[in-house]
Length: 195
Image (cartoon, rainbow, N blue to C red; front, side, top):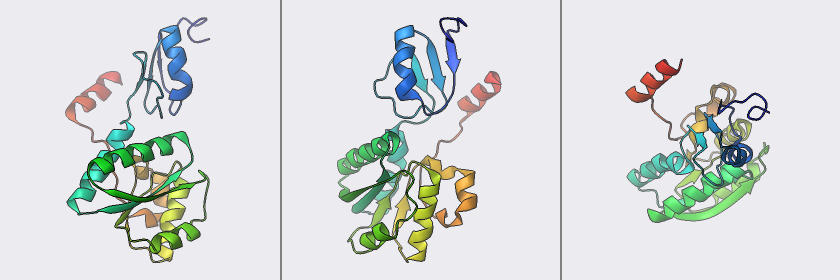
């Protein structure tokens, strides 16, 4: 409708729709720009996501792990496309840096009870946890229960940790390490011009 009836040739927004929007953007030859497109299965020249790629999400955590001499990691992730894609990219990049992935544990995206998983993790000989949860209540619940059960391993995650609702609802998230994009001068100028 936007292209054929309203005759738009550029569409900006919304978020998390790359899998659905990228193919018709290419087919209709309409430019789509998303602030956070999610997983782009097949890149094309008509669909752009302005958020960092999965690789850009995981590299700061891997760099920090190398600095801290972390050798073995357990990965806990949500069973959704984005979380699984981040997990896969993390494993690929971690193995490139000789970080051993001891185990990967999938969870339901809406999981809120991680006690069994945390108890299992405490028995493992690992140095850290990488946990790219899909939704903040799961990430918050995991962090809270980890502290309640005395799990002392460093938790790494992704930029969605910066969510103010997560931080307010689950102060136990404090101490999670994650990469987050910095606003440089070029981006600040772009924002000003765009506004």
